[in-house]
Image (cartoon, rainbow, N blue to C red; front, side, top):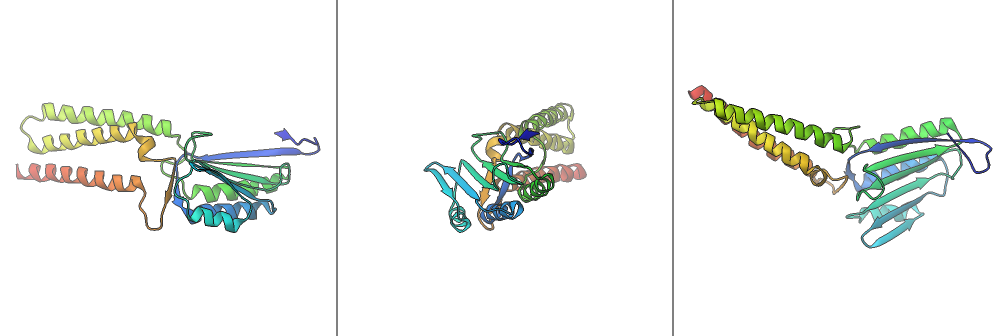
Amino acid sequence: MERSLQGAQPVLKREAVVWRWKGYRPDIVRIAKGVIAATGAGGAVAEIVDAMGKSDFRALAEFEQAVANLEKFNTLVIVSGADHGPCRIAVVFDAAGVHSTAAVTVITSGTDPAAVDRGHARATQLVAAGAREPKSTEPSQVEQWGVIAAVAAIAGGLLGLVFGESDGGMLLLSLALAVAGVVGMAVSLGYENLVPRVELLRSGQTPRLHKFALWVSGAIGAALLGSLVTGVLH
C-alpha cells in the first residue's frame, strides 16, 4: 500500500497482465471508453509510439481516428483519472517488449478502495476479451512445455519407425507423430514470431496462429487418415 504525496489518504494499487493479446481496432477504442467511464473523471490522455515517433491525444474522437488508421505501434497507453484521486487507470499495450514481457498491463490506483476494485475489474474484463490461449500463462512457460511435448513426440515417432517393422499403419502413425513433434518444436522455438505480443487485426482477418493451426491440423489429419486406411487394408 502506498501513500499520496500529501500523506492524507492511502493509495491502493492493483495490477494485471495479459501475456498475448489479439483484437480489432474498435476493441482498443472500446477499452478507452470503458476506462474513461470507470474512472468517472475527465482529463483522459492516450499516447501512441511507433516508428514515426510519439503522438498524444486528449480528445477521444481524435484517438479513435488515429487508431482506425493504425497499422503498427511499439506502445499504446490509455490513462484516465486524476493522479492520487479516487481511481486512476492506465492500460499499457506493449507490442515491442519495450517495458515488459506482457502484451497488455492494467494498472489501477486510487484512494477509494471500492472505486479501485470496480475500475480494475472493468478494465481487466475489457482487456481480457482479447487474451490468447493459454491464458494466465507466461510465454516462457508455454515455450518450455511445448519443447518438452515436442521432444516426447519426436522420440515416440522415431521409436515407432524403428520397431514398427513391416506394419504399414504403425509406420505411418509413427511418422505422423514425428512430424507433429518437429512442427511443435518449430512452433515452440518461434513462439515470439508466430504469436506476436499484440496482433492488431482488420475486420474479417484471421489471426496468424489460427491459419497455422488449420494448416498443421490438416497435414497431421491427412497423415493419420492414411495410417488408418493402410492399417485396414493390411
